[in-house]
Amino acid sequence: MGDQATCACGAADAGAGKLTDYQVEVNEGEVVLDVLHRLQATQTRDLAIRWNCKAGKCGSCSMEINGRPGSRA
Image (cartoon, rainbow, N blue to C red; front, top):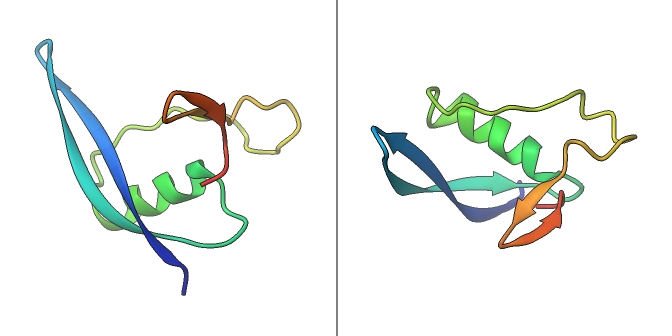
């Protein structure tokens, strides 16, 4: 079993938005996309995620985390 992390996900609604906090498991070696997929599968099935192949070759699966580029959870 991994550590628990808080993931704040935003939802837009007619120009307004709000963040909802979720507690989700994070395992060693996972990237943020892995954690978001777990969150989507277990807690918020309506979470929309745009992603590419996650082959780890081109870097397109990285994202901005706390204002800095990265992909590690």
